[in-house]
Length: 325
Ligand code: UFG
Image 1 (cartoon, rainbow, N blue to C red):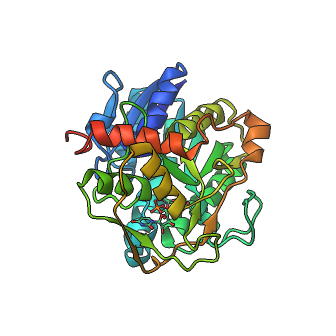
Image 2: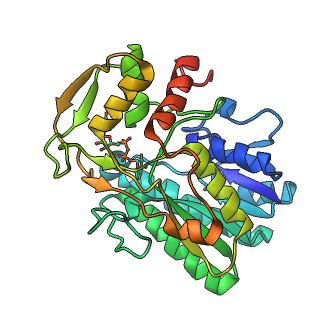
């Protein structure tokens, strides 16, 4: 299929682009490069520098490349920032997605895989979290993703749009030629590895008084290559019925366990300080990914935390300054 990947110059999008291309799809990347990196787009993949809020340019791009399906990852995604700057999030993530959908309808593109998030659940009543669990976002970021999921359901009914939403838990790890490069970086694993390399200060553990077995937050880390494969499967199985799937490994690791893993993988001491809780952090987020396993046969190939951290460590050592741009 000819597939447009919005946000394909970003961390997850660049892995999805590679996964789709490896599966034989003809991929076009579209990104506004505000957080993405041109160098993250593989050589030979057409690139369009377009903002999703520019409906006419989006439509033109889809027509130029005769696009048949869209994988929509373009968004801003920091939970904490979204609480302080909600207008940025509603503008980028909601207005951007509505504009994209307008362009799709205008250009006659009827298939979309949408990048959603575990942040739609807020503080879950129980873990592992199933897709039918209550959705109570604690942040504008989670609101934006949940709202677009609802829009897709309505567009499926009204316009026959085939759609699937993938709710990622904690994307982590790297491919050999594509990894994490957020500026500023806020995510645990890259920050821990930068602390080990001495290119960032000691890692601050945000809270050690959570009701978890060692007092630090539990997250479900899922390798970005496994996320990429889920998009390939979701695209192949798109239907107008619409689906929503969690993507995690089904196991949780505390922040202390991530630090211990980084110590094992790097063979070095991890410089650590303990600090206060971060606003908006849930104590525990663990996915049940049973549904996508049953429906699409997805199963993480790299569920071991040390393997995920090792791939991120490889990337951190080979790309100490991230991408060259
Ligand atoms: N953490 C620290 N110190 C840091 C950074 C993080 O202790 O310097 C802790 C956090 O408190 C949290 C865990 O490490 O418990 C993971 O934090 P990340 O910032 O790496 O990831 P989040 O769980 O906050 O968020 C990620 C994505 C979101 C997505 C969410 C869904 O960034 O976009 O997963 O679970 F919504």
